[in-house]
Length: 144
Length: 298
Image 1 (cartoon, each protein chain N blue to C red):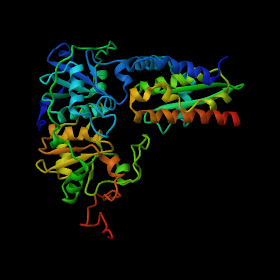
Image 2 (cartoon, rainbow over the protein chains, first blue to last red):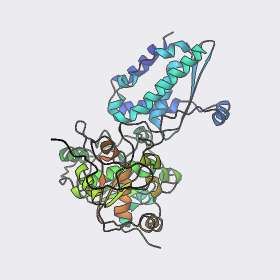
Image 3 (cartoon, rainbow over the protein chains, first blue to last red):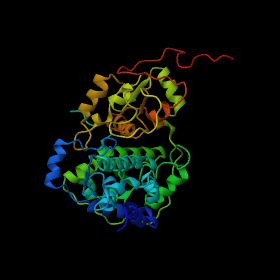
Image 4 (cartoon, rainbow over the protein chains, first blue to last red):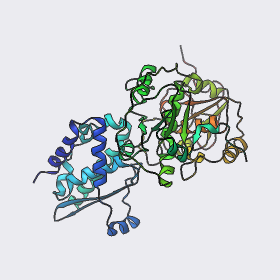
């Protein structure tokens, strides 16, 4: 099975040869593919502090692992499809793979997607905060 | 009940729905999140992105006149086209694009009241089809300096005690934070506001459904409560000049202020500039002559 980074590289590779419009369309496809929260997580959302406060859009993340296998559960407001698409890509790369592996995600993942050209540099900062939060969350899982 | 001073600049979602195939009309979407347009836009609408399309990629400035002409030509806009702007977040970015179009002298610009939110609430259809129009030839005007303020002018303006509006959040105004709540800090080294500026956070211009407040409510806010005068020169600013372009729109067109400029350098320039005066706290404050720049030893 491919590692988290290898799977992420594959997904990021899908963006490589696309023009700006196609990149956005692919991002929207990923956004549409993020499943809605289950009733269990809907209930937890109201009592747990899972919001990523650095991110302007409402984003709620759960970094969970069972038997060393990672699972990223997320909810992103529908008015922010860029963020939703990006989180969906992270979940696709992470889910079912070793939690300890998540820490190896490279920090330049956004640069390699070429999204800064499409979105403008300012708007990629919130996404960087999400990567940092996800890596930290799984690192805490691994050490705890 | 008083009406807006220039009501013709606002159109309803119904008006837009009736003009979807009007060749005289071009509908332009401008959002904070570009993927929104890709996901679904008003049928036939083209996209203009504030960062990628309107900003010069090298100098911190807007695109130049030639680039603006190319932008319009590629979207099938002529100098006589009625351009209707709409977008997410209370039409924040739509007003920004509107302002840039006015900067280059486009005559007939309008805003769809309520933007994406109102279109959605009205149950109108979205389209994700790609849109293109035959290219036009567009000739723009030179930049209109009467709606744009640069730093030196703002410095003179504040020293003269003229009308100045800070449209950021109260926390940013007081100097407690250097960016919007929940937004990342995008690089100002000092917090506070330009001395003399009154704080009117931009969302106060709008209802929850994204439409603008009534002329009566806006008059109450700016003229009765803040004692602002329509004829006095006014400058509005925020962090990079986007939120303040919405306030510029409200003052200029809805309330009929005669001389309003947007300071697009805004806090990201002022809060980083050397030796410009800054006020902290909830009060506008003012400048004591000579206090801004201490004398230099020869």
